Image (cartoon, rainbow, N blue to C red):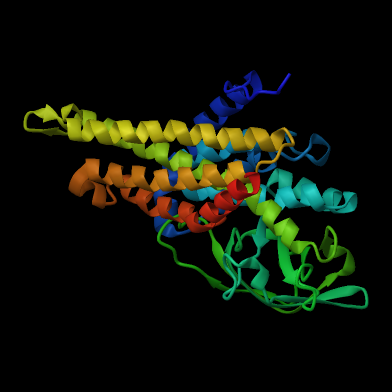
Length: 385
């Protein structure tokens, strides 16, 4: 019998959802505006996320994690992002861009060394992939790792590293074999701080401002031979596989932001009176709210299907691209609708919808732009014909 996806969360997932939802409402939402204004996230707040076990959701219990899967991590990112999108991406990038590749490609010794700290949140993880000259074209990377004796010597620059400021462990993609077009990149696990590695710049961003986005400068940074993650020359495979999973996390972030937009817009429409009636009585406003709600449910179905496929060991790359594409673009639509429902007040920071609008846009860009996702989806369709 063909295995079918169950669209109902099981008891464990429902319990997790309720616990994280309550925590997000109580502990995450209350400081979201301040974190956005200060463009920072303090250690005490990150420690509270760790105390909830949110950094180790998918890490096996033997390494100190909860031993749950992608559906569970999707629930966590969605619920936290409803309250604070910057906090949501902290968890998403940590899990999907650092923990996942170590779990999938790492040796047992690497897993024992790094996963316990990543599970507790004592160590934050990140992926160091993008460069000034290689964004969507990851294969054009120039950051170089040369093997000299028993150590790799790394030189180059990486940009747009989510969690870069606070990260203690990164997965780095660098050039090891420049004359091998199909095997020129390799992946490494690099600890931070590290001699020869410095933060060159912390980006000042439109949205998700409490989430750090860093430039890494490697100046003959020396790491041991066994820092190699997976097989030499297979760094592109590590990167692309990692991004497939990361897209589910960003789609979940977008879903959380969209839901926050719908909630705030609906609440405001019920209380804002114009022409002697709540504006929610007007059909123009009702159409916006209805469109937001329908798109949110469609996004949820796409996202949780992709998460379920990943947990089931099935091919999920196409599903993840579809989920991220639709969820991110609908998230921006929801944010625009929410601001419009609020009118002039929506443009002021007295209400959170202006923050939602700023936070929403990045979901269409990182972990692959909408244009790249359309290419991925179209090529996948062509392969099936």
